[in-house]
Image (cartoon, rainbow, N blue to C red):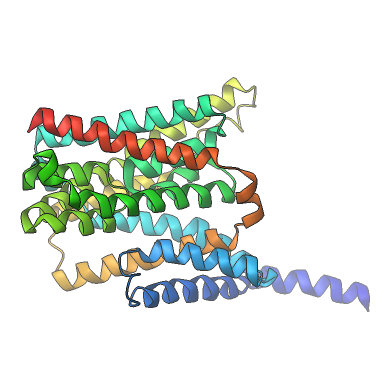
Amino acid sequence: MAASSQTVHPRRTAASPGFGLWPGLLLTGAIAAAAFGLRQVPGLSMLSPMILAIVIGIGFHNLIGTPARAKAGVVFSLRRILRAAIILLGLQLTAAQIVEVGASGFAVIALTLVATFTFTVQLGRLMGVEAKLAELIAAGTSICGASAVIATNTVTRAPDEDVAYAVACVTVFGSLAMFLYPLLPAALGLDAHAYGLWAGASIHEIAQVVAAAYQDGQAAGEFGTIAKLSRVMLLAPVVLVLGALASRRLRHGGKGAASAKPPVPWFVLGFIAMIGVNSVVTIPAEAKAALVWLTTFLLSMALAAMGLETDIAKLRAKGPRPFLLGLAAFAFIALFSLMLVKITS
């Protein structure tokens, strides 16, 4: 009888492989929905649902525990749903936005990104921060916050605790920028255009840029948002370059030809394709709003899954050095981008 039951169970599992995903998908979906709901609470509306989702996920995992039967769906959310969401993110961008920013504005954005990423990785090496964690903090600071962290990890392949730590860093310092920047335009002599460019080139999350830039008026808010979206466009080439570098490290590490194959992030090509579609096809405003909501919800599911995989004890074990690296990266991107904005304005 025992032998018979053992042979039936594998057959049933193989025949319905998708059934095991539902508990985890329902759990990550419920956490994402809760994150959207929490944004209605006064004081929390400034935080993106993605940030709230990872916080809820970490709390659930460490206080209650992630059920074993949810594991498959959680992993699916963290891998497949994440990639689908990043592809859809491309529908929020158009090639025309780069034209609107202008050559000098785009140069400020691109130079700031490259300089900040390089500075953060090199400083991380000097501080003794693990290379993969330093890359994630660099990506989140220089590109677009939590979305860049989890997209970069598809090629960096760092432990989940590293991803959670990097997301925490970019959340803390991006939120700090959101409150500090609106106090500074007059003191720094920045007009609406220059302030919008500075905010878009240096603040971490899209939501944080919108919140900070519109404090200086409609013109600053609109230009800051466009500048930030232009910066998000650079996510694709950065992830592709990091994938190539990861492949080179594998080869230099003596791995075999098969294991040294580049971790090609195919979803990035989908992201680029969606930018192309959005550049030539006019999507109705109602459909565009629905797609923005869906993209954010799917990203929140992925961040919820990240939280459900994160052990607080392992985060504590990393110590303060990565946090100090995030602080240094925040200071660098703010000052370097401000210098470029002043030079070009």
